[in-house]
Image 1: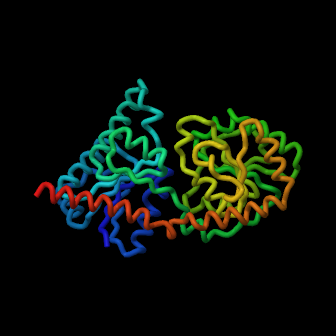
Image 2 (image 1 turned 120 degrees about the horizontal axis):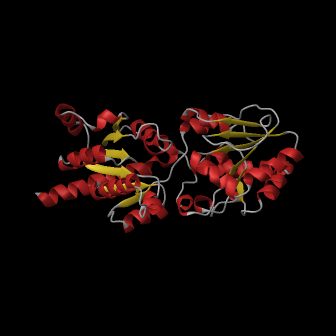
Image 3 (image 1 turned 45 degrees about the vertical axis):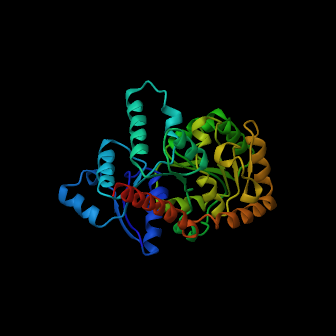
Length: 341
């Protein structure tokens, strides 16, 4: 049994995948887990700090790297607690040469956490290699996995034929630059039953009577939203930030039995029909969407394959990867103690 204390970066979209859900699964496996999610938790009193040290073997920090995090992580490490730091984004690649003072400070903060942590975790080998290049000695890729809630959510009844999308504000340009908005406008003209549903802080110039956007949802509501889709998409421009992303979006689509179309970039470049979808070149969004809308048989075939693939990518099935990463940090800490002795 491990005793884990985890510090979340508030309500960031990555927090459920990178902290809350893994920690809940670890607790189900009889590990002792304490989760702290408030900023003031990063500045514990001496008494509170002593309690943390007495009840933890390993401290896990998800994504954040500001000075309060650095100080707490270093104090815990000095007290003999193993430190694991997780970041799911290749922020260094995108901001390393920035002249913006705030972004330069954020990059410096990441370097400091790399230096402090016994183990760095991230979502894929591409980003892991980046951290190794930047000086992290022990980096372990642990992919994002699908949650119990997503597995248990059933298809939702809905009207018409729904083209769906889940995305954050940084995906606005993906749609616009790849011509997806224009392609969808044409499809709405040609398919009277077609509607578009989007979840996220995005805004597309589409007919208001056929287009519904919900800016924010609770994490547990996302599977309900996806289960109303008939087809889903994941367009990505071929830029550095997109190449290091996680494939979690199409995994969630596939688990819900929703056929998907995605760009052959980064997390999706090795996926295809065996995973429940198809890859789309930049100038072929209209043709590929039109074909899949018209081909019900193909959609059923893709849905079946996608669900089979995704059910092997759930948190309960793969929680041992998180256990192994934390255990590695504990082993390294034991070695450090032995060397010091």
